[in-house]
Image (cartoon, rainbow, N blue to C red):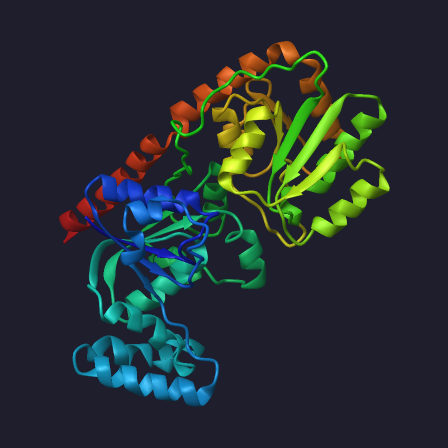
Length: 415
């Protein structure tokens, strides 16, 4: 198959799940191109970007220059370049009656231009977030590219985006060919917003089980229980509630050490919270770490805490990959009843689940896991088995490619 992946930026160190799909398709022998709305940094990047030569497969979608004179000059040059060879998409991208401001501002034309120099037909155009599905639909309507339109929904592109842009997905849900939410919770959300159920298939984000080595968790006699959170410091990660919970347990005399890896807009606020409780040294906001450093922290920690919640603006997440990684490595986990997390974490089997946004319930779950040290190995083995059965990268990629193939076969049989 000829597959185009449409990304928000490339490369992106935090989007391992996208890279897994791209290299999985290449390994299976498919012809892959990458289109990206923005450039990521090549300084800190997954080694597979270079191993697979992905930097040579990517084409960046042009953004319209902000200044009107420059925009018009660039437009004139590109219009002359492509107008004779591919007049249809050029003219259609300027149809203000159909595309409104996107056409009048020339923004759609500049996006279309990225496809006019490359092949114009793909079997699959896979958009990695809902907003990118909207972009691809408009580009496909101009005729600049053809192919079955597949859109993944991953979290911040669901309720948060729709609250800011009411009705934004109506046309995509009507015309898109396949929708791949990363959890059952988002599949229900899509159905509630009018997506035909027969066009929805849940495809989890997978992880490389071979990379994350299993190790049963055991605590040395004089060692504190080492708690760990790895998360961007934004409201939906719920880190404040975990700090409150751990602070309560420390006040009761529990021998704990809590490390929070990550950075973000809430860091200063969370540091002030730790300082106000006089817990610096017991609760450590360690900042951003690279992948190898995160692995080292995970290897020496006992329990992973992922206190996700739906933020006030509707921002949420599907299933945090760090939970899958922790379970693959044998860590018992504390999660929340949020989005797809209960689809991964079975309460009382591989960890415990708390009510989201509830520090008291988080405290209860952490206290129980701390006291059940004899069950850590059992929880860890159960967690590893769940990951191997349902979230292993190879199995998930195979499900994705089978979904592509069914879509292409269906199109050929109808055609």
